[in-house]
Length: 276
Image (tube, rainbow, N blue to C red; front, side, top):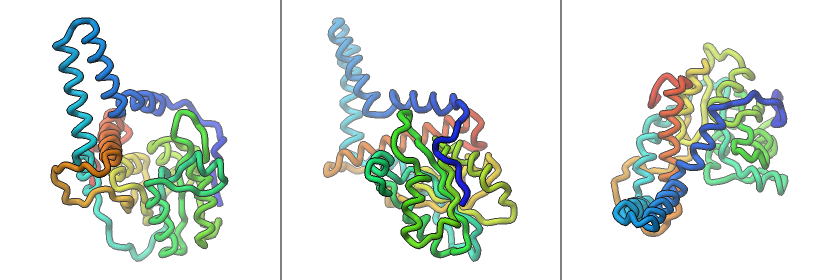
């Protein structure tokens, strides 16, 4: 088993830091709360027209985000970009991007606790069992600014052996903090894959950005999407039963589209919306 330990020294990454700080403000609930505060401030300064307008915009946006399926409509074109392919005859390796775990709970309880993106782990395990000679690469460390909890690699080291997948097949990369580092550090671990078939497992909404970044890093991969959140035939509708899920879907979708734009503008991907 080859691995990069989570405590390994990392080079400063300005792109990572800026992206995290930007999202602290751009995250929809935060941005709309700030808009409401600015509107209230305008009212206090007797600029009632401007204040009322800003607060009205924020309220309408919150209602649409929470009580319609607009979030799923934002996610759907991303999820439709890479259909699940037929099973290849032979697979040399499977790369799973992290993000399907609860790092803090896993660290506190010394278990492999998964989150709403757990399908990444499930699908990677299923493919590993189907292709018993394939290497299984788990790439992902601590992706938030606090740096707390266990990374994906540490959690994977607990999870997969319990399913009968030998440790000798695992390649654990526990240093990366974003998708760009996932690709670069994975490339450093596995080297050239020319003439080989490598599957990339991640959430369907994240697949376009991930494929673009891995291609740029010199790792051609076969997209194997998991963790679908849309039906593929969504049309606008009101949705009152689970507003917190509607809100989460919109936040995920917005972040992913902004990520595609940022990675294209920074040259980390050659396409705005990579496809098959």
